[in-house]
Amino acid sequence: MQTAHSVAQVREHVRGWHRKGQSVGFVPTMGNLHDGHISLVREARTRCDVVVVSIFVNPTQFGPNEDFDRYPRTLDADAAALVEAGADLLFAPSVEEMYPLGQNQTWVDVDQLGDHLCGASREGHFRGVTTVVSKLLNIVQPDVAIFGEKDFQQLAILRRMCEELLFPVKIVGAATSRETDGLARSSRNGFLSESERTLAPQLYALLQQVKTEIIGGERNYRALESRTSQSLNSTGFSVDYITIANARTLAPAGPDDTDLIIAVAAKLGSTRLIDNISLAVVRDR
Image 1 (tube, rainbow, N blue to C red):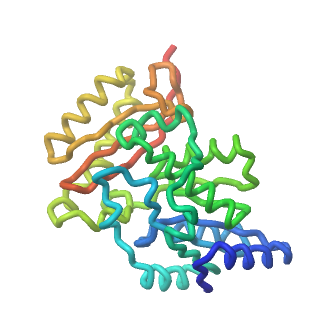
Image 2: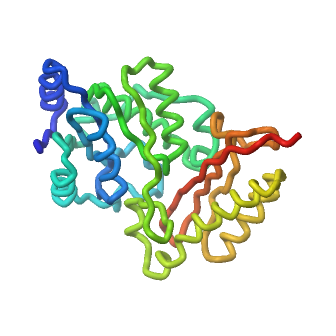
């Protein structure tokens, strides 16, 4: 595996691969890689001839009082894991390389989809995500880009962005990678204390409980959300949201919606966790 720190180096590599007729897969990350990230790299490997992975902790997607400064930077360990996973190129740019003019004046923003779920409480977050991903796609110019379904809203927004802006890339969502106790793998899991880590799997367990109630016929989604939120708060979480949403629009679902996403964001101590479950329901007659 080779490592590039500049846009010019990445473009030189990619031009060479494309001239040979090779397909390019891309996995954007912020580093501190875990098995979930590695599963995305392996998925890209099954789909493409060569795989590029980026590691860049993007400052524009962090809001005030969020964890940008303490977000783990583990480049050497990440590079070793990527060699083992079979990546061909690691792109690890500096902030100055990604934002060469300093304060950004050009932004990519996807309306409406970012108004719900995480977007409701993290103002500007998805504008930062879509802007940096558009930059990365422009730099790498992959045929396929892989994103995890744990960040369901992010995946939906990036798909819409690529469709509307005509990016020549196929966006692939990969299933959420989980620990044996059900906790969705995340770089932020490392911030959990021992007691918090023991409690954290209840997030997924309650999502499964909500799914079971909907399958059983519950259609008062707002009441179900309220009960679930109270249950999480009572066990030690601080709930940002628990929402049963239309999987296409991400707006709160009604009883006639059939494709649902049950999404949750909650803090344990200072660590913010997110998770979701998709569900197709039969419309009531």
